[in-house]
Every structure is written in C-alpha cells, then in structure tokens.
Length: 504
Ligand code: HEM
Image 1: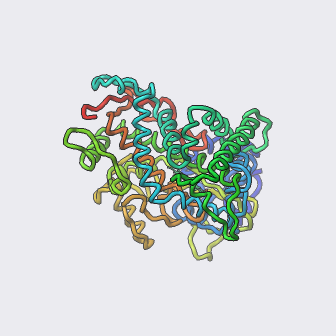
Image 2 (image 1 turned 135 degrees about the vertical axis):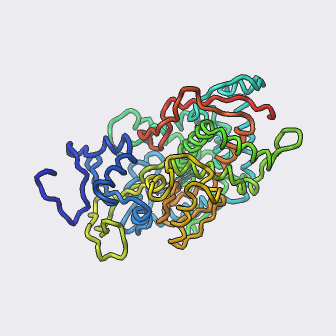
C-alpha cells in the first residue's frame, strides 16, 4: 500500500516498513537513536512511524523538543500515553491516574520533601551508606582486605543499583524502608519492577505471569507503606523524609492526602528515581574507569576541597557539593551522552498543525498530526547532534567547565541566541523547552528529582573515587547501549576493576 498509494500530503511522512502493525518497532526498539538519525536524513525533523499499531509522530531537534514538551496539555497528554503502564505499578489516584491539574498539585507536595534542609541532612547519610556498602559487600572484598596492590572487579550496573536503592531509602524513602531493604521489601520491589518494562508499555493486557506478580507486589507494597503511615500517626513525626513531608500537605480544596495516595506517590518516586539514577551512576563510573585523567581530576578536586593533612577526608556538606565543578561536569556530561530516557511520549488529543521544519509562526504548517497519534520527543538526539556539539560522542566533562572546552562555545552560542542564560553551575543549565540539553525533560512534566539525583550521584561517585581507583577490564571495549530496557543501560560486559587507594 505504501508503494502504490500516494501519501496524504497533509500528514507527516510515514517511515517505510514491510510488516503492517509491527511497523518499525524492531528497528526502533534495537537502536532508537540510530533509527531517528537515519529517518531525519530521509524525511526531515518530523515523521511518523508505526509501533505495534500505534502511529508515532517524531519531532526532532531543539524545536522538536519544544513542540512536544512545550505543547499544551489539552493537545498532548502524558496521562493518556502512560497510565496503562504506570497505574498498575504506582497505584490508583496518583500521577497519571488523576487529571493533570491534580498531579501538578501532587508534584508540588513532593517538592516540599525535596527541600534544601532535607538535602543538607542527606549528604552524610549517603556517604555513610556507600562506606558501609564498600566495607561489607563481597564485591569490594579486595578493598576490605586493605591491600593497595590487589585489584578486584565488579559489575558496574549491579553495584550502582544496590547503592542507589540503599541511599534513596536511607534518605527520601525513610527509615522503615531502609530497615526492611534486606528483607521482604527488595523482593516486592523486584516483582514490581518486572512489570515496568517496554512490553508492559506496548501490550498492557497480556496474560503473563509477570503481570500477575506485578499486581500482587503492588498490593503488598501499597499495604506496606500504608502500614508505615498509620504507625507514624499519633507520634511526633519529625522525619526528614518524603512520607513526613507528604503527611503535612493539603490539596487546594483543603483535603489532606489519604494514606493510599501517600503510599502510591512513594512507590512512584521509588520507580522514577531508581533506574534513572543507577543507570547514570553506572555510565559515569564506566567513563571514569575508561578516562584515568578525568578520574584523577575528580580525585584531586576531592583532596583540594575535603582532604585533611593526614590523607583522610572530612565530610562533605550540601553547600560545598553544589560548588564542585569537576564532579558536576562528570554527571552533566554523562547525562548528555547517556540520558536514561531516550523517548518521551504524549498522546495527541486533538489535531495539531506542525510545519515540516518545526518553524513558527504557522504559515508553512503543512502537516497535521491527527488526534489519536502519539508524539515523541527525543532530547537524546539533540544532546549528541553534531550540528550542536563538537565531537558529540566523546565523553568530555571539560566541555562544561572549561571555556575553551570542545563544545562549550557551540552550546553557549546556541543558548545566547534564545536569550537564555547559561550558567554552568550545579543543575542550572537552561530549563527551556527548546534547550538542546534536556536529560530531565522540560515543560510541565519536567523532572522534579534533578537536584536530588545530582546530590545522590555526586555523593556516591565522590565517596567511591576517594577510596578506590577504577579501570575498565583490559581488552574490554566501552559498553554499548542496551535499549531493550525501560531505561537505557550499559550492555554486558560492564565490569570495572578497582584497587584501594593508598591514601584512604
Ligand atoms: C520526570 C529524567 C531522577 C521523579 C522526568 C522526565 C525525565 C526524567 C526525562 C520527564 C518525563 C516526561 O516528560 O514524560 C530523570 C533522570 C533522573 C531522574 C535523568 C536521574 C538521573 C528522578 C528522581 C525522582 C524523579 C530521583 C524522584 C525523587 C520524577 C517525577 C517526574 C519526572 C515525579 C514527573 C513526571 C511528570 O510530570 O509527568 N524525569 N529523572 N526523577 N521525574 Fe525524573
């Protein structure tokens, strides 16, 4: 049909495919960025592809990001795109299970729990958790043996995933979750996580055992949180964690959050922060292992700011953490090449006009994206676009901190044209919807966990680098992206060799 039928010129061009319904699902699923770059060459910045029967219109580049992420929620809906995936996992009455204005109120409640006061308390808790992990987990056996000449080895993603959940539960999630982490809670988390996959997104109603396990795990986890909330009632609750913050909040109409709403928001935060942060931490550690110069600069920064004269380190404070240019640029650069979320979807609620070049104003708006399509933004594409960045695929943290850095100039120029101030400080790069750099998204659905993620990742990386040197395994190349998981992970092997530093 595609070959014989002239295409409807009011619609964006459709990516050629042989198999109806399946469409471009396989090519997209294996390598979404490669697929987008190829389609851009052939069709331009706006095109539609078929994804198991769904029509997905992609809008690329900073203007494409702006079109999708800056679009009005009456046109583009996140809840219609995601609720079938998220509601069975997070639960009823929160996030995409409620109208957008209610969710926006819930996001404000969460922001109260992400306060600077709480963050101040978290830095040392995270440091302690990482130290305890390194002193006790078998992956760090040679470190524990105190021998500075012995190399050990661990899987970057396995280690990071454990450290991430330990540190998130010690801080945001709260004492009760941390205390149960070695017990029932981690099994529930694993079962719930098994229901948060691309398969669940694409096929919400399959009769699979994993779907049943997901539903059972959700019920038990929800009950677990509700039980914590009930036990806290009647006690003086000064916990500097998210449950404490949510318990004190009221909707605009004066209603307090119900216990199950708090429970479900806590599950949503657990799921939103776990893989995103642990994937970023894994990529950062792998790059540091691969780039000894960057690793040593990071270590020296720690010595300069926190080193005692006897070779030990003093504790970090939140205020100091915010002013470490090398640590900051290591995380920032890692998120540029490895943003955990490669595709951001919205459901199209009403026909929307768009120009093929995504230019405004609307005179050359020759395409209509029809109601019922999905639109897709991929900031991951603009973050490695050679039109914007020099050497886009090279991990080069200095591009953020050094005015002569390889791409800082191009990026600054781009931002200046749009009148946005570029401040290379902690978490302060433009948050505009047309920024080429959006690892945390943009617009009304922008991430609220960014500051926490920087704090968590920064403290974890700094603590590890203070204690051990890391290297890639000899003969192993840098891992490729695995796009088959919800969050872009490093493919195996992703082993890191480490050796205790003499000065620890
Ligand atoms: C939204 C990325 C960590 C909570 C988002 C979005 C992105 C993102 C791209 C936008 C999704 C969309 O527009 O559909 C990241 C990255 C992280 C991270 C890269 C870490 C490196 C966290 C953490 C939390 C969190 C730690 C919780 C403490 C949220 C929430 C939303 C969100 C609540 C809002 C969803 C919405 O409004 O629809 N994140 N995130 N994230 N994230 Fe994060």
